[in-house]
Image (tube, rainbow, N blue to C red; front, side, top):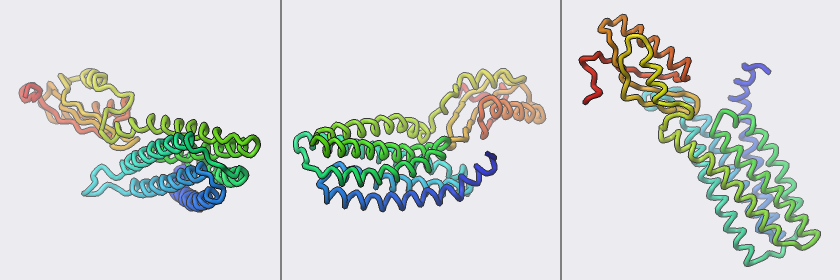
Length: 297
């Protein structure tokens, strides 16, 4: 599998397949709502709502991917890549909200058990499961290096699990009239969705809050910089993610030399160190000598 092919695939083909997935999920939502009304199954209607959120999350993800490819301009000098992180935040919030709604549905069903037509549930949920698996496979390939696509994939995965749960519940209702299984399955599904959402949400917020990137230590970077020849001290260090894959740093560096060429050489060494050792691709360094050291200010 060539790297070049993979890169091309990520752009044109992937958006087309994602848009197809959006369309299929909208059609599926309508089918589930109709099936839910005919069978009297609230679990199918709940699953339909979840499917609609799938279509929405995929739509948001595709839109964000398109925005993130825009080159940097005078309004967004760092570029638009963070649009994908914002999309992930919207999707995860949606996911958590839906899981709370499903828990509410399950609690309600304990007090008001529903008489349900089992075979319609199994049939419609079976079709839903096939669509969910296809959609999940489309998003999974792109979820490995994008928090936006990971959030969309989680939507699809949770929906596939929900469909399995609905089929399981529908089968037991058909065979034994065990209506309580429907409630139990809903609790399990919503608990799983909630857990996944709550795991990814702090990472997304950390990115948007410009927190220090995972695995990087300000102290470690400071020590490494101060080991470079002619560097006396480094302070005012700020490290943050421009987007998921690019890290930026700004710092004040106190040097012992006043010679411009010497300082340029120090700057080159520092930038190489930051790029090669810490994967920091964008660094802004302000140089000071011992007389103009601003650390005391």
